[in-house]
Image 1 (cartoon, rainbow, N blue to C red):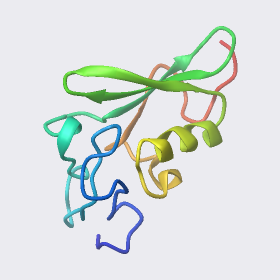
Image 2: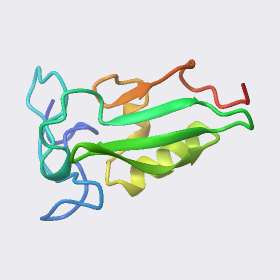
Image 3: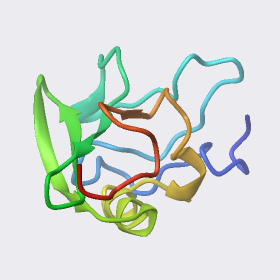
Image 4: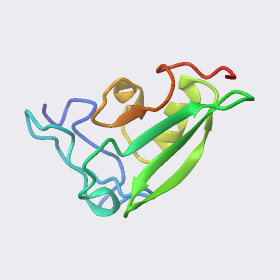
Length: 115
């Protein structure tokens, strides 16, 4: 990938954004895009979309500094994209199906209805 690829650059200016993402390029063949700051050293997908709740929606968390931080409850892919955009990811809709970035836990991807 190069800097022109949607995953090649993360927003955030010169320093880490609110969730530790930084500007940078992703090397070709990287198992997962490298991150610096609060997500550095994370070995699994840093973003988790949890199982659908009984009332609908899925909690979204980001793993930073050894703990999970709640981004919010998504009721659609649009909501998820808004959370990821707010976390500083450029073109977040391009990573929804990338297991290096997002783990869809205990339910099918892209389904938000009540269980």
